[in-house]
Structures are given as C-alpha cells and as structure tokens.
Image 1: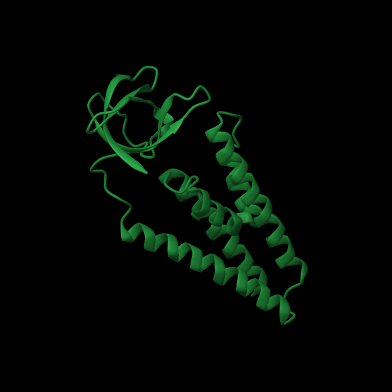
Image 2: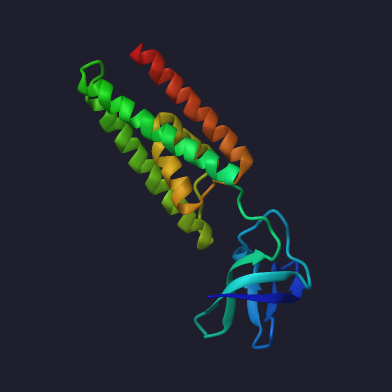
Length: 190
C-alpha cells in the first residue's frame, strides 16, 4: 500500500530524513537510496508517496519513494523499450534460422545463448550489489559482455531489473555495442 507524506528533518549531507504521513501518524525514516527518481535530491517539505516497511529493529521506513507530481514514464519511452525488445527477438530468431538452414554453424546460437545468459546473471548480481552496497561490476565490463554477444541478455536484464535502463550515457554506449555486434554478424553471414 502506498502512502503520501511530507519530508521533515532532511539532512542532505547524510542523505536521510523522515516523512510524516498526511492525515497524521508515526513518522518513518527515509534514505536517499529509497528514492526511485535519482535526477533530483529531496528537500525539506517535499511531498512524496512511499511504501511503508520496518527495519530489523521494527522501526518504520519509507521505501520505493516517489516525488508527488513527477511525470510517469511516457508512452514514447515505453515504445522505445518495445522496439529494442522486438529487435532482440528478431535478431535471435534470425541467428537460429540461418543456423537451421545451414548457413551458420549451430555453435553460434549456442554461444549467443551462453553469452546472453552470463550477461543476464551479471546484471542481476550487479543490481543486487547496488541494493546491498557491495562491490559493483563496472560499466565497461557490462559493455564488454554485450560486445561478446551478450547484448540480448543485457537488454532483458535492463528491462526486467530496471538496471541501467534510465542512464542515458550508459544506454548510448550500450546501443553502440549492439550495432557493432549486429553489424559484424551481418558482415559474417553475408
């Protein structure tokens, strides 16, 4: 259940404060990492919506925090995500079909599947590490996994885990790696 409230006692240096629910009730702790919109920092008196949880000591915490009035992802953005998924599916189908008709070794689709599965798992571990403040996989390594054929798995992981999917610089490099791999593959087949 989502609640609405106002931020109080915000300490921007430490990245935390509290939220008091509209209509009264107990205040809850809110940390900067709980905000889904990392494009701006919270400030005192911001109106937010949040889910209420408790920590190990049974203290109230706000999670999955959103600023009231922030725009939701547009249908254009959703459309772009669909185009990427459709491209990945068509590419994988193309690789399998040309392998089945004998123009490509059956090993190539297996290598793509292995690279994609590995890349998907690395994204999943990196997302978990981000939540737990553990060591992270570098963006260069994620791009390298895409370059060796794991980009379909990376695309699925980005959409499924909402990981690196909103970071414009990362997405630009990601789609460059996809075009390089796809272009090299097309040249190999032709």
